[in-house]
Structures are given as C-alpha cells and as structure tokens.
Amino acid sequence: DTAVSQTPKYLVTQMGNDKSIKCEQNLGHDTMYWYKQDSKKFLKIMFSYNNKELIINETVPNRFSPKSPDKAHLNLHINSLELGDSAVYFCASQREGASPLHFGNGTRLTVT
Amino acid sequence: GNSVTQMEGPVTLSEEAFLTINCTYTATGYPSLFWYVQYPGEGLQLLLKATKADDKGSNKGFEATYRKETTSFHLEKGSVQVSDSAVYFCALGGSNYKLTFGKGTLLTVNP
View: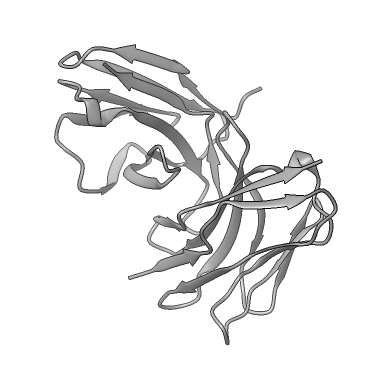
C-alpha cells in the first residue's frame, strides 16, 4: 500500500485554467503539507494542515487554495494558472512536530 | 529563524569513492536533524536522522553525526555505488511543525 499518494502524476494545462491536485495518506498522521519544488530542486513549503486545521500558510498567491476534507486528505486547487506555476508539487505527511516527513511521488505541473 | 546550508553541487564521483556532503545549520533550541534522498522521478525519502547532540544516524552505508559544537551534520559514505546517484537534502526539524530544508546536492556516481 502506498503511504502517501497524490494524483495526477503529470498535469499539462494552459495558462488561465483552474486545476486540482489530490493527496491521500494512510499512515494515520495528523499533519499534512504541500511543497513546491522548482527546476533547481529547491523545496519551498506552501501549506500545512494539522487535523484539518490550517497551521502554516507561507507567502503563496491566493490563487492557491488548500482543502482538507478530513485528516487523511489534503487537496490543492490552483486558479488562473500562470507559467511560473510550472513545478513539481509534493504532498507529505507527518506524525508529530519533529518527526520525519513522508512524501508522495510528486505531481509535475506544466503550464503552457 | 532556523536555516540549513549544504554544499552546492553537483558532485560527481567514481564508483567506490568516498563521499562527504557538508551540512551546517543555525537553530534555536535543540532541533532534530535529517538527511533525505530524492531518486530521479520520485519523492523525498528519509535516509537517516539524529535527534540529539553526538547521535549518529546511519542507513544503507551512509552516516552522519550531530555535532552541536560545530553545528554540523555532514553526510558520509565510504564507498558509493552508481545506485546512490540522487539529490540529497539536509533538513532541520523544530517543534513548530515546519521542517527546514537545505537547497539539495546532486550526486552523480559513474561506473
């Protein structure tokens, strides 16, 4: 069983469209994250939810909106996509504050 | 705030060479330290961790020792293999739920 799964794996879309990425974890963790990885492999945290409550919201355009229907799911919706949104987006989950993160395999978003 | 600085890559080695990837950190309190590895096309995986000063984390032949006096957590492996080719990230974990990553070091091992 995949611990952290995200879909789709690849997403190609045009500027101005709206798209969603879904993430699910079966580890029973309370905390979930979205990270963005750019072409230079730099990882930037975007959001974090703890038990469905938003606890970290970094400086991210408000075109990005996370939603956590329950503590096992954290989805990311992006409105009005721009070229600069092209990146790999990773979902991750964590048991508690200083414990390791478990990452999904990423969603490669390409905006044309 | 917390920060992690790791050596810039890329690092290219021949098989069976010795590997060191330097990592230093600044932090308040007593963070946990991690090394993550990202193989091509995959997400990050925990490689090893250390939770307090002088702890040594080890896994798959890789080692790193938590050195509080030098604020370092350097990754080492005595004999690298082609299959170790990946991006390696040093990270620092605090109690505020936000893991701080270094910028990553690309390692390529040639046969």
